[in-house]
Image (tube, rainbow, N blue to C red; front, side, top):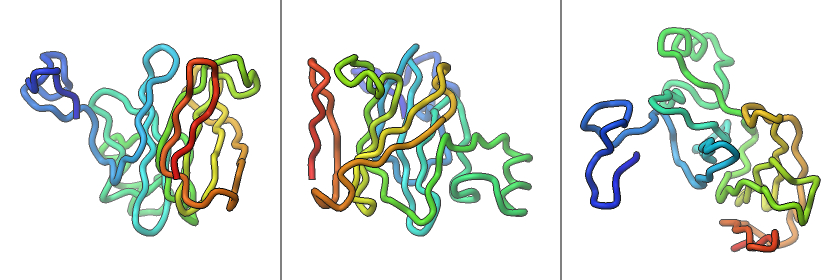
Length: 166
């Protein structure tokens, strides 16, 4: 949902008079702005296909008819009929995606243009390296797995330092 500071609905929202910005998301946990204003969200569900999505104005991400990719016959049918946007990445078994941040600092240069994802069930910090356009995940690194317990949130300091909340 997208609203103005006073609670009113922005006039350029995709559905006039409606605060909905995008639909078909299950249980969004993290939301972050990336390069060129791209909006990313982490999303998890009860059984399978935890996701990270590139959120688009008016986009449909399929829930409850689609979990993760359009990879079953029923999901593929629904996706075709409703122009569902598939996630950048999805995990089965689930990892319980949580906090999400976009890393731009050069303190850790190999993480530039990456999403940093906290996971609860996965008990890890994941670095999702994006392509140059920020529209596709290219690789994933896993850090601190089963070291700190369930990681709920993540923040990036002004000097590029990483803060985790358990």
